[in-house]
Length: 366
Ligand code: DAH
Image 1 (spheres, rainbow, N blue to C red):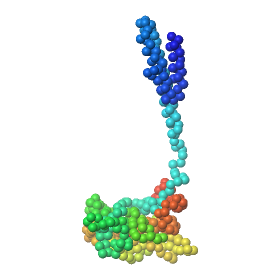
Image 2: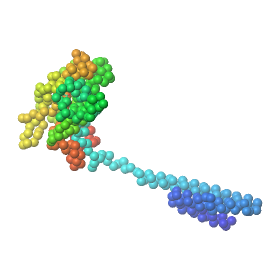
Image 3: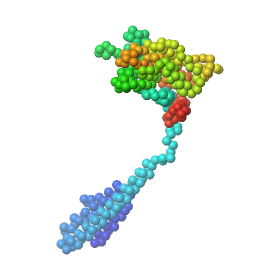
Image 4: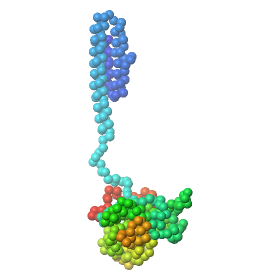
């Protein structure tokens, strides 16, 4: 019996001493495993006389039960402790500032796109997109630029290798093809037929073979398109005046509408904003000079017809401008190429906080 008492004391102290689940399992094997101390005791039962066996067997079984209970209790305590340790280690300090104070800014192009969306969104425009790799028909033909049009020349346009049928896709040279894609959308046509109005802006990438301080092969434009049955040149003018004043945050910003030519509009106008160059520094607002910032016009009836709408019923206006250019003007960024250099110092200097979402009431470029 003294053997039993020693084994019991040893087993229980091993269980209590186990500092983690691994040590506890080692203790279990040492006692109850195939060659464990209690298991060995069990094996001796067969060699005992029957009365002795009954008595001793009951004691060994009781010991086994006691040790199993101790193992269970210790296991429970250790796994609770493991969970507590994990919770403590993975604790999140919810009082830490969520704002990325020292890193991560919004690129000025993204910022300006958000500003455009805020301003035109307030006027009822929605955001539309189209593919960067465009077919010839959407990029040119639909927009009243037939196959011999000079804008199609190799010097201006990135053409992809010819396909089996001889046609060539292009990197879109402007965002205007999305005008056609949107007007051709059956859902849009149903909406217009029901008396609704189409108002979209299309911010996105555009590509031309050009590379100097004010031109990069990839740049950004935003297209605008309004189509319904009554929109006229007065609406075009009011919309663009309101936009320019809101965007440049100059309430009495002077604007000049200059007659111009685009294949996809008639009549067409380019829009200039007033500025001054006093002391060699550009200031947007009243001044002696004008800066051209966008092209616009009433959508050409041929374009409306090419897009499956009746030009005697539907009319509207369109405009297009360079996002990079208006970003440079608004934020005093001198070199266009720096936009795409991915220089962290430049991005930290000209970047915007991602959490200051532009809005007309809250402020645009903060
Ligand atoms: N697509 C023209 C360009 O890239 C810009 C433009 C001018 C767009 C007049 C228009 C517009 O929608 O009406 O040069």
